[in-house]
Picture (cartoon, each protein chain N blue to C red):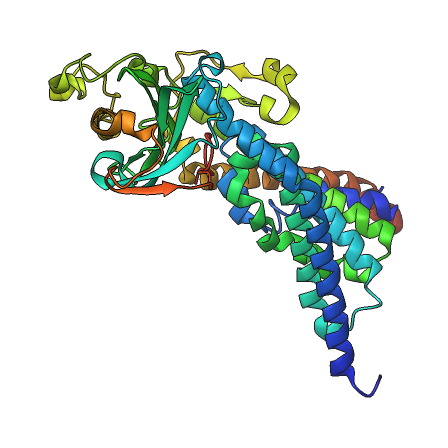
Length: 233
Length: 228
């Protein structure tokens, strides 16, 4: 099923090698920003953009850059893109920019980005590197949004609050509320909520993985056993 | 070239430094005007929420000066925006600072009309505890609207406190320090205005005590700063 390298890339990015749930990279922005779904989505999109751009660029220059200076060059590339994305966000998504504020420059320090540049993009073709960046970025974004939604729902009793900061006034309708009576569980919004929430997400992922392998093992074993019976007969 | 790998590496690094800086410079040029305009509009929006746009006709953002009175306004270099209509003073919006919030200073916008009544108060940035001390945010509760149209005569000075201290303003459930400090800062701003109010609108002279004079730089407009 995963013979196609492109399918495998997407699957790795979204699930098998998810940067947030498996590699546990980029935890600083992940934990800091996810107190609402919209914040998570905003940082996720910015990270995905930077990751795809940097992977593409690193792949293009991979034969040009001598190995002694490749890390400084990668850092330069990433930092330039992050600054460009930050300025663009300030210009076109000003309200959201004010909320995400200091976390946008922190994308530079997101180990997932330099990690993908070094581990993948510097060794693979442009197309594959772009897809890898996109898939890893989307995988990271999904975790950000899920964790943000979870914390927002538990801590504040709303979902997609302030979505209009991102999508314009029309998105006001996206907002979902559990009702004014729900006061929220404060801890979910505070930093401990981020760690506990992430822990739950990782546990759920591992649980699903374990189920899958068990089921796979069961389906593989049956024909095998039949085969050995036939052999001994 | 191959004999000098260090030189070659340095050259490559330099090339990328130039290219990266070029990209940032280009983006900056493309966005700088828009960002400045965004910040101006955001500030104007928050000022207009306190002083209706049709009650003034001057460019209130550039009609500002810096004040220096840590006792009344919470700090030195406090920005005040002056609203006028046909040259006559209408209101002043102070960027007062609440020095003694529960988790550090808070920034306010306090609009005082020329007759000494409040056009309104907004908290521009704060680090108070989410869920407990953040009910002064307008999107969480309308507590902050309780300041509208108040003045030093309404209530009298003794009433300028939270109910627990015998004043007229509500405290928050589980958080008294935050509203108490805001009420005190608003009261002090009103006192400052009573003492210096009309002279603010005159061109700065030496007669105005502790005044840093005119300045063009704007403080951060309203909205949440990054929340940690």
